[in-house]
Length: 430
Figure 1 (cartoon, rainbow, N blue to C red):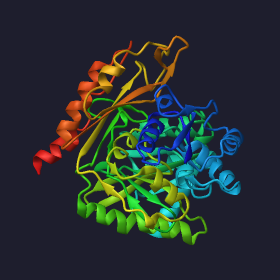
Figure 2 (cartoon, one colour):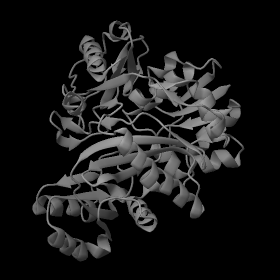
Figure 3 (cartoon, helix red, strand yellow):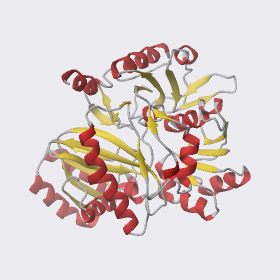
Figure 4 (cartoon, one colour):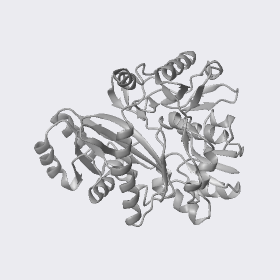
């Protein structure tokens, strides 16, 4: 089996690792990949947003399956192009990917289908005065979101009305988020604890992966600006069996029914970002792919053959696969470049990779890395590495992950030291 993985981050390294465990021993191509994925397959220098190049690559290598990691090519219609060429692919069409590509569309969709989410209104630059009036009416705290894709940084939680006005101006007047901010969603601030649930679906049947919790803020104690994610763990104890049953009944199944009824069946990976409130689970946002760094913890917890699972999903035969989860916990700590998510320097040599990777049940997954001509692995992004560990319980997984993180060295290395703290506290409280 020949499989093409699209993307270059930690999520794609996790996908490559999971697929490489298959007894099918698939031949892997990763476009464009990183210094970690090259140890599992062939990195091909085709950008994740080069739709023409990716289609040509799939044809040239005669791939049997494409797995799309990031959201941009999905929203841009890569799946449509591949399906038209007869190439099986894991991912939603452009029409279905609007659940992530347009928060305005997603909010209206949830409203149409009675899916629980925050109260909201949508505005464009033409409605600026109405948006200001709405802020005056609802007060703070409030959340201001760029409707389009903003690399996970387009949602601004505003504690005061001046902060909300500044976020609104940044999007609608200053264009700080580009086209992503041409349309803005203003929604109520939901009290509760966040979690992520992932449904793998062929449009009819679905299976759920282990519920996870991401850590989006750069600073410990969930402070500072949002990032792409500084760590994750699974399963998240805030998502109890009772909560998960409600997520299935009130969110996942109505979403899949609604997309099918509107003529855009959702096939691929549906990421449901949740707020677990006193009233039950509510949708914060949809994503049309695996999260990053959540992928780095949910994939290692998946028992069975990931290659067969994805193949059956892409061919509309998901019901043929029995999916089981390992009775364990996984934790991931992201190592970032100093200055991220703002400006940062690249090109620092990374040491200690082999030492960390030699620890039992520890995976060092690359994100922003590249290999120099002299063989050295150097930093090449804001989020550089994700150290993932498995153990029978969360405390053990976190201890291993932090031990591995401590063995890796590069100039300006930064990581949060409180990953999983909410989960540990909840487990202690019973």
